[in-house]
Amino acid sequence: PGSGSLSAPSSPVPTPMATSAEVTASNPGSGEAPGTFDEGYKDGWFSELSSMWPGQALSLKVDKILHQTKSDFQDVCVFQNEAFGNVLVLDGVIQCTDRDEFSYQEMIANLPLCSLPYEPKKVLVIGGGDGGVTRELARHKSIEVIDQAEIDGEVPRTSKQFFPKMAVGFDDPRVNLRITDGLKFLEECAENTYDAIVVDSSDPVGPAEVLFQRPFFESMHRALKPGGVVSTQGESLWLHLELITEVAKMCKDVFVGGTVNYAYTTIPTYPSGQIGFMLCAKANDGEPFSFKESRRSPPEGLRYYDEDVHRAAFCLPKFAKEALRGHLTS
Image (cartoon, rainbow, N blue to C red; front, side, top):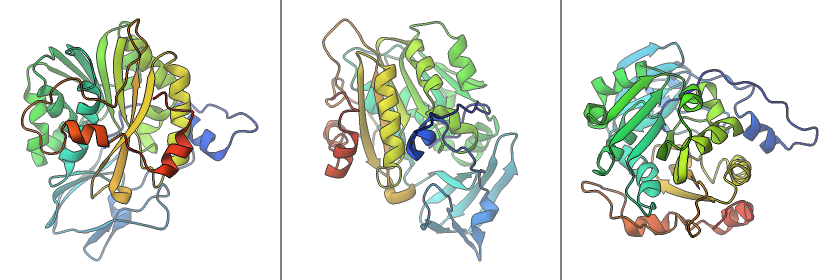
């Protein structure tokens, strides 16, 4: 996932009977300190350690450390690996690699855009400082404006140097990259502005915490045109099902009369090899919206997404369907 894009969040107080998952959804990452690359680096190998996936870690051999710094917001490292190429690590968590990034970027962008019954004109990216989502959006020729709000300018700088195949999206003349607080950007934009909003965030620890909270989703709902769509990084069914369930419940309250659904993709270097997307559509006067069918042909040049993969992404395993029953609208 992309870097966090918001400033330090407020700390809402949970209700007295709130479950641990409800506390996480209202203030995810509370009490959790972000990690660093150095904490997971030992004997020439990097192990992705986090309390968000206790008892397990993906380990990659570090052939060479290419870049390491600490920005105003997070720990940033790029290293080279024989199997996956260049690897971007933010706050001790793998964000993308040369080999498998396209499976995530193509899905988070095309699941919402290809579900739209009309051609999108104006879209917004929150986070996504590596440029991968922007690259995928730029493939859609109908789009006239791609606004992007990324809080940490170090991430685009790093991506342009070490991940040029992702950062190429920044070169598109339709892209307006702003190094700013994403929530503040949303609050200041006019109501009913965007056809689609894509939130490419890191996990809810550190600067991305508020990307999983209700005020952020309410701001997105306000910024969307009627019938507009949202796609957000939605964590792993295998590791974070309670959090996903609570976020889905919250989204159903925010997108009243609209649509809330969940899909997923496979990607080897994310925890459990799988990551999902929370997809929401703002209510419109027309017929009920469904994300489960692709209505628009995908752009050229894709390697993962197509119409068959689109449909399959919504086929959840039984345990996930049971947990999310009543919280998804279709």
